[in-house]
Length: 128
Ligand code: 9YT
Image (cartoon, protein in one colour):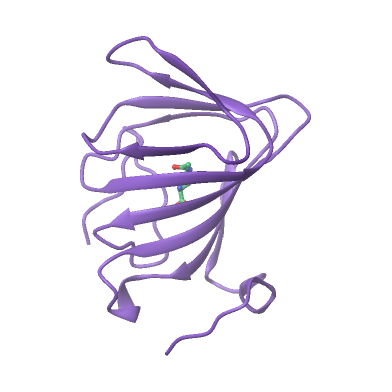
């Protein structure tokens, strides 16, 4: 059994900070679970243009507000606590956090992240 607390990983290598987001990586590949789990802050006003071509991702919003654009259809979805989106088709999407309000998301990736990934120029993570 693995027990982790967010407070124990803050300030360690498992906390990955970028200009748009900070990802606190709770479960990653080493755990052998077949998926990874992050507690991710999307910074207020951030706009993320993402296509996880190598991963499937499910995202569950627990704090903050923003909007998600499905680039293929142009559909815009409002995201708020209790909203989940699952990128089941490697969907090209743009996530925007409202100005003045960060978002907090629980993010699950399959295959699992190794722990240190940051996005490449296309908004993807490499397949490790
Ligand atoms: C929601 C989203 O994809 N944010 C980018 C960061 C990523 N989810 C991560 O590594 O936690």
